[in-house]
Image 1 (cartoon, rainbow, N blue to C red):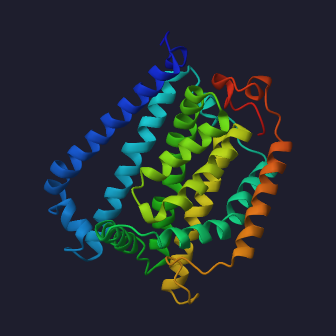
Image 2: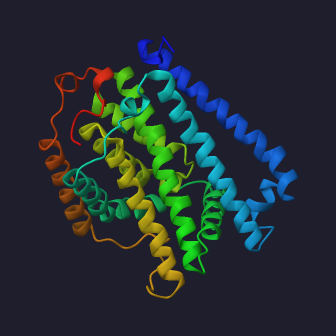
Length: 311
């Protein structure tokens, strides 16, 4: 290739990326409602509505989830990176393995934020929304519960790969590696771009009663990527959050813990405040340890995430 998308205007790049996303979404939807019933003998409505049960059905649900993550997020993100730069891994910030200190900081940022995030989740759950929306949320929760059924260690490993590893890679490539970069180019205000991307990240999950905590998590992941330029750090942070949820669900099912992790806790405001302060402090440490290039400091979008900062 002689011409790359990064040479085009930010608006054209963004429209192209959205077009690729819609194209693969339509491809996935076509398979889901035509090819999948022919292969499995089940319609999507039967699987998601709980009208069919059994290990075989759970396996099909996991297959649907796997294909969704792969086709809708990972492939479009990687394809856009390939079309944008002769070195797509460098363009995405995936060309270098992170060192120990930034890994520890990224993991601590995400872990220490969980109490503050939990308080916002509890508040979000009490939003006054129409009964139809709450019913849709409950159906989504039931679907997640079915996916998280883990009677054996093998099931735990499969779910860690399906719900923690793959989404962490795919969604970070899509939202932070590509979308956040493009949004920052459009608005030319890096932190506003990080916030807008976090809002979009939460919105596509289509769970209004979990909207706020997902925005916060998305913002932190975006901040980690923006400050470091290394996408593997946000991938690790994303994996940690999802992995904790999966592992906690397993421990609850095998009676190791008594509190249901799927329910928002009763985090005290002062615990959440401490959580927020510690998280902000860790972000500050990451910022101070980061050597942003002059272009990034001047908010030149094309150089905001070139993988040349903190490794």
